[in-house]
Length: 459
View 1: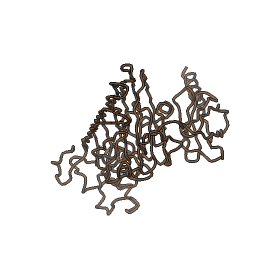
View 2: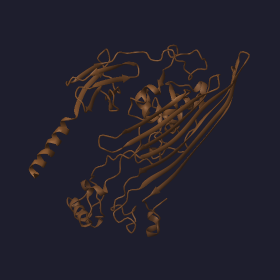
View 3: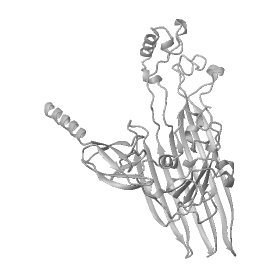
View 4: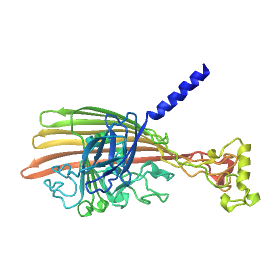
């Protein structure tokens, strides 16, 4: 009976291995040049990937020879059935949204994408949010807009809870962010720890739910002559939804290393008001991202070996430094993994709400308002302190060193309200915008060495 059960388990193991088919290929344009960042989705599923810098991709499919959907901004979308061999997919160039009016870069309402003298992108969120695996604005724009850069920071004090973004390689404080054409306030955090944007204060795009946005307009050129010095790198305008109806989405994903689980739940509800085009749109969104870990064993001296003349790293110490550490680790019932540094993305939980409304009083006059609130809790990590760091670690509190935990409570709220009307041939817009951002920062599992055993562990 045990033999039969073992054979069944072995058969199930092999069948599960065959159930996943790996599809590989390359995506190019008409000239044969590889296309990086192309979105690839298995049709009818949320399973997707993107091409690398050389246009190559690899995706696992449960069914044999599925239909793959290839899409990229500026190219026609293609559906191709996998044939079990290496795929070469060619995408044809296509101008998208040629007739859309651009609100950034000029006050001339007739300026469109085909006539503007500078680089402008218009991105419809509705078209991409169900195909991209990313769930926040920062991550979406990172894959869609040329010259937009947003890299998640690690072990970088409060910056890893904000993830500053930039255009054209300039600072985060040189990108102007507008919401419905109104200036968006910046965060209260000054980026430090020699991270990207060190010494600057940028705008937190992730504080605005993607489900509240109809489209994103990006001016990828300097606009300081019109908007001021904070628009040297360019302008990003977020146009909020005005539609009526109900829409709900749930997204789940994780990394290939089985960490960094992401859950996104969003709800968008719109309703018409009156007969003159009035509306109210409410978007609610919850986004939870768990931490990732990319650490491994290191060659640093773990325990205090000063009496043996061993300091810092094994490479700079006597040959027996590693053996001494191994003996002390075993004697304390620990493993080397216990002393690894926590390196990776911080854990972030966002709870957001945004409202956009307009109430026409006549055909030529309307009251409007929009605003939202974002509550964020995060947990990042500092550099690990090893027991050998005798000038940093209080042994009475942390006999085996410690891994500091950096926790954040971020509160962000904004409100814009105004009255627009037509008087003769003049358009008037009288409005006011308020914004507030607070960053409560707490360090736990730490110590102040100068205070000795009396030191608190929470700051």
